[in-house]
Amino acid sequence: MLSVLRNPTYRRLFGAQVVALTGTGLATVALSLLAYDLAGANAAAVLGTALAIKMAAYVVLAPLVGALADRVPRRAMLVSMDLARAAVVLALPFVSRVWQVYVLILLLQAASAAFTPAFQATIPQVLPDERDYTRALSLARLAYDLESLASPVLAAALLTVVPYAWLFAGTAAGFVASALLVRTTALPEPEPHRGPVPDSDPDPGADPDPGQDPKPDGGAVACPRTYARAVSGIRLVLAAPRLRALLALDLAVAAAGAVVLVDTVILVRDTLGRPAGDVPLALGAYGAGSMAVALLLPRVLERGGDRAVMVRAAFVLPGAPGLLALGLAVPPGAWSWPALLVVWLVTGAAGSAVLTPGGRVVRGAVRSGDLPAAFAARFSLSHACWLLTYPLAGWLAATTGPAASAAVLSAVALAGAAAAARLWPRADPTTGLGAPAAAEAPAAAAPASGQRGSRISRPSRSTSSP
Image (cartoon, rainbow, N blue to C red; front, top):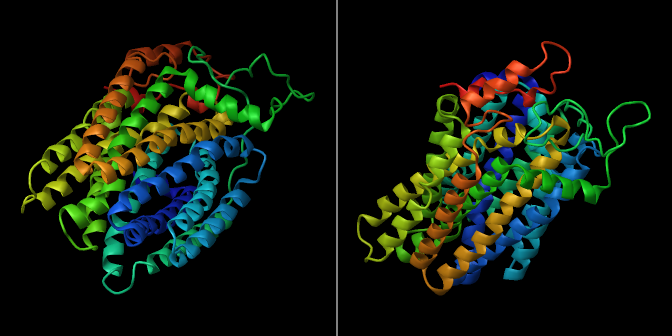
């Protein structure tokens, strides 16, 4: 997996991602404790609302930013968004009202909604080889796990010597370090927009959509208006059965993950009566499960295929909050704290198995020139799931208790897993994802030379080999 770091451009981008996400993990812990200080027993509702605002920014802004991503210098966009996030985070320790938290979270996540899809769309251009890109996805999952494992452990250590407000300074330092790394990295230019790839098109790299006029010089097709690009990205995601299934999987992850991220502070501080330093430890268990699976996943995907791994893991997700609901129905005892850690560990592992291969599925469904719009649209639609589950978890925990919150979101996760199993065809004629036999036909039919299309259109043996 680490061999992909031999690419100097990706190595610097990965470093930027690691330091930024480490800082973001510190902010997650600090925000939970800030909400508890401002609202007490209503902290879950405040945190759920703040995270819902975060998701709303992603849902509204990400498609528009994706539509503009090939018109703005990529490096300038990434650096400016990192610096904007650093400035906003530095203001968070000074808030004294709940509404101030909401405003700053909106500004912070607006910048993240611009940064993340552009960053995601850059990686497949830096690493065009399918196996390298798969390894990069696993490394990216590990980087995200730093937000829920290494960062909480670091936060727990820092909380023994400094107030939690200082954790926001660590977040700002992470964003500034990320900006410096991106600023000193040469990034590839975005490829021209070429339109969506139908599921039935065996060669996504062939000709542009006939409904669009080519440029006079015979080059890439002209980009439509920004709004039309944003809408086309969403339509592209919703048009492919496997991408619709991917959104159902996102709903399952969001339902289980919302229980962890919203209810942990109440479960640890109020239900179990444990100290503030145990909040990051509980979140760290969630990250530990995710990281363990991310390390194993490249080899698992080579044998099982994306569909088999992701759908099976999705059916594990409802069980974790379901067990939590059952455990909360009895008085807490000495077993409660280790049991919570185990449930969070399993939740993180199953969520990682679902989320990590998602980039492979998107990459295999669209042309290279459409990756920014596709990633932005998928980013937006997937976060719409979190927009539903975050406030649901917070409101239920505040009004009816964590047990009811876990039970309802367990049912939501089960619905998402069942929908994904139904929507994702077992035989995928385009990329071979989850269908080894079907994958070989397009490869055999492809021309021996010349116009074979972009690399992403080729069936990947790494995803379909037995």
